[in-house]
Amino acid sequence: MPRQLAAEGLGTALLLATVVGSGVMGVALADGNDAVALLANAGATAGMLYVLITILGPISGAHFNPAVSLAMAIRGEQSPRDALLYSAVQGLGAVVGVVIAHAMFGLDLFQPGTQARTGASQWLSEGVATFGLLLTILLGARHRPTALPALVAAYIFAAYWFTSSTSFANPAVTLARALTTTFAGIRPMDVGGFVLAQFGGMFAALAMARLLGTEARRPA
Image (cartoon, rainbow, N blue to C red; front, side, top):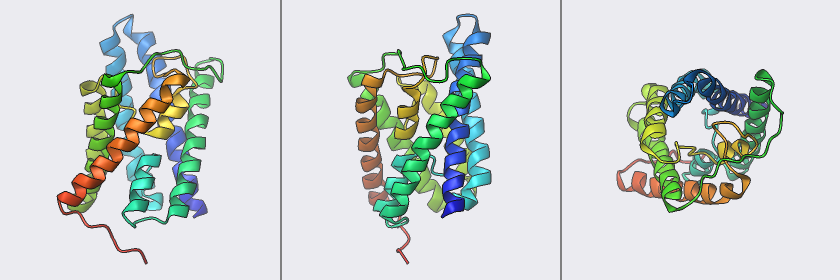
């Protein structure tokens, strides 16, 4: 478990450093073109996800996401205790990643987010984004486990573009992104709606996976 928790904390920290850092760099290079900034942000995040899932998946399963850990506990593939520990480490790692990104660009280490992300369309986007991510993981793990890093990376890259929220799809990511005023940020007051929508998407994905016939491993 110490190795697994270290992998989850490290992976989530690197993921958030990538999300925030690439957002800062993208805006700096885009010269006011939001599409270029988003492309840089999406590409860097997808690329880092592929790397992290490939190298850390064999150690911890590479969840980097409390919604994924909870889903695995519900399916009996992880104990509730381990899912709780995973989620705590993921949240801590996410905050560390944001701080590292700020430090790399000489920004204030903690800066409450100011980017408004709220309303029915944003919440629906987060529900859809998380639903798709969980379904990709659950079906990919059953049918094409060796392709899972590429599947998740490709899905996240696409979801950046087809959702109005730019696909946070992760409660730990959402909480940590409330600590930055950069391109990747979100207002703290908007976090609750995103997180509720994300867990709603997770439960919908579990129901769909059950309907499609994926079977969880029996707990030992």
